[in-house]
Image (cartoon, rainbow, N blue to C red):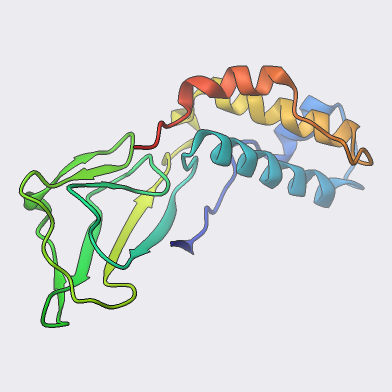
Length: 180
């Protein structure tokens, strides 16, 4: 289970960029286009399994399953904070030196195995920040895919059978995280 602690404060495509892409003048549809930007970003993130802009997450589990933990949404910005309730039901923090991190894929690995936990719900809590820090860091293919999605959703706003263009998946596929 995971929860968003702090949502992203910006989007990979600005309202001005989206309106230029759509060839829309005026501000009558600004709120609608802004919602399309968020929906397109969300689609790209869900498809790829990554976070595009800085977002803080809390990932919770009942125990450490094995030596490897897959975080919900990479790209990880800094060392996650791993807390757990030990066998005495006392909250502890795992030293970051005790595990290795694959920042791009969001994988934590502890060769010696993770510590034992108390038999309780939510015994393990991992907090971390994920996403690119600036728009310039986001691969241009992802930004372009988001613009295509915005255009397609704008054009087909009343179509209940909307499917994203194949080109979007082709652009996003190289950035798709393979879950372990």
